[in-house]
Length: 58
Image 1 (cartoon, one colour):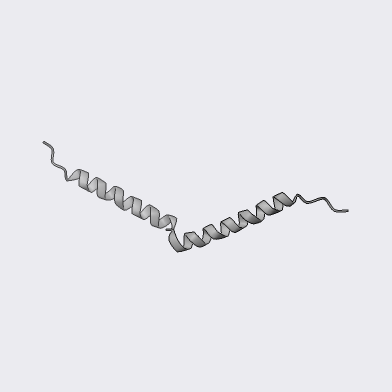
Image 2 (cartoon, rainbow, N blue to C red):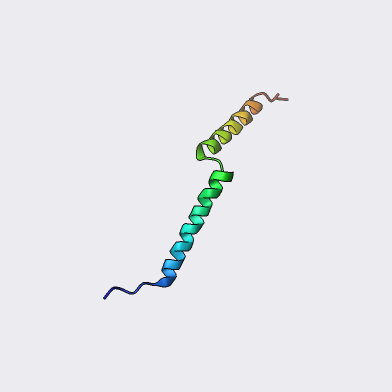
């Protein structure tokens, strides 16, 4: 005789997998990769430092 299966756990796991699949599709369609985000952040920091270094002291 096999062990009983909790159907709620099966249902929740199936829903989690569906959400992960949808999230993966959305990240491909709309998102940026981690490398792209880091590049943009580094460029913004670099621009801010450059602008700060060109300020005149009064």
